[in-house]
Figure 1 (cartoon, rainbow, N blue to C red):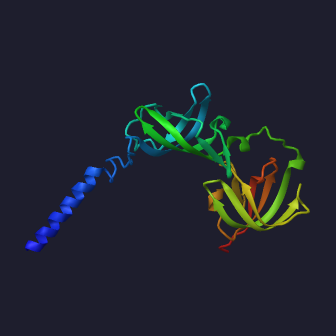
Figure 2 (tube, rainbow, N blue to C red):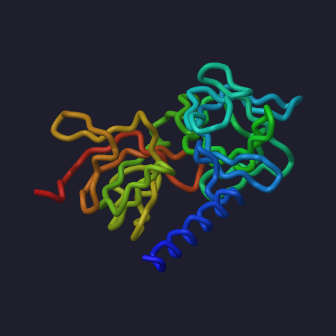
Figure 3 (tube, rainbow, N blue to C red):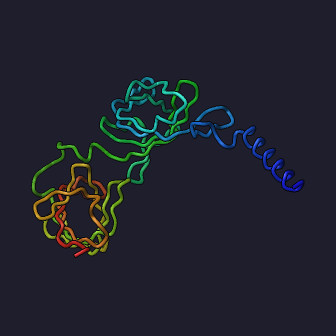
Length: 232
């Protein structure tokens, strides 16, 4: 009995020491740094970029629930500040916050200090410009390709195809062992006259994709037709 009490006492002292040093974070699940700031991940849609105040207003915000306060926010929008060290990532490339457009969707790693949210880094999850109807729409900008789905990346909104054949369009003389195409929330998969989300595609499905050449590294999928279901 004596030894058991001693073990329990040592465990209690250890737990109190951990609580005292703050290594468990606060009750909101945030992890404070040594200077009292708090880190979190915020997701939202760019409403405006204020070049004078070096800040971005996001709408349709999520991720604010676990912040200590919603200072700087107004309902479902929030203002986030940036500086010269803030980096924006899109499609494997680095950009500046000033390059963001209204409608872009971003994940932002923020630091909260007092009443201000500061962006440490941003990742564009949806580029509104790729879905713009202002892109050229003549027939030379479209192609139809056929390939087998290798994977669907919902984070970057891309589909990688393998055993790809160009059926018609601007690259009919070129075939690729693998090809990555971009898509947006408006892109759907047609199956027997019905439409389904791109996320319903599975590895091994054969598809025909009408793609648009936007002058970027990856063609943009305007429509997708399921040719063969891997489950059948």
